Image 1 (cartoon, rainbow, N blue to C red):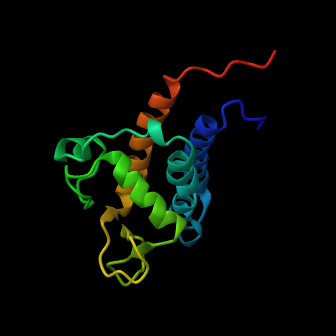
Image 2: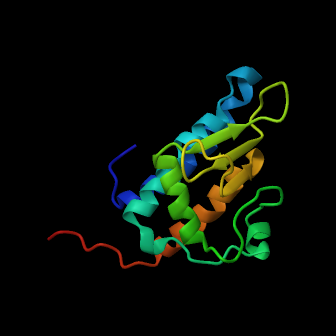
Image 3: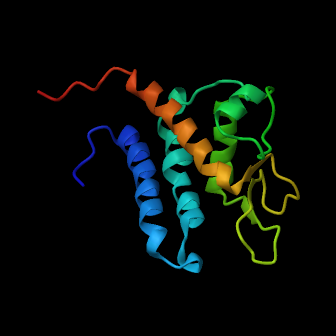
Length: 161
């Protein structure tokens, strides 16, 4: 595993790798024991909270247009429109994650994860962002790739002499 050279960048990269590793590994497990959404929600710490707290200026401020949403693979999810940008959305999502104002919704009697709703406050009826469950991970990967690209353009730290 090794030490971190660039903690913020590597934590995001390792969080994405962790999700990918798990998704490969779950194939042999029975469906009721596959916890991919649980892992993804746990990994919001590394993909949403840490970047907002430690690398805020590297979060893209692109407007949430229909074109951007489609590019991110969001076709059934409901997010704010172009009045909000990605940085503002990530900031709001950070607050939701940190205060656990995230709700899982099922639309079937099987109680599958169908939607993940991010709210501003507990008990709030409607959220400001509702992700179709299969679209949350592609959104996170798209956003994280933009973030990592921006972080990669910063000046590399100078090693101590």
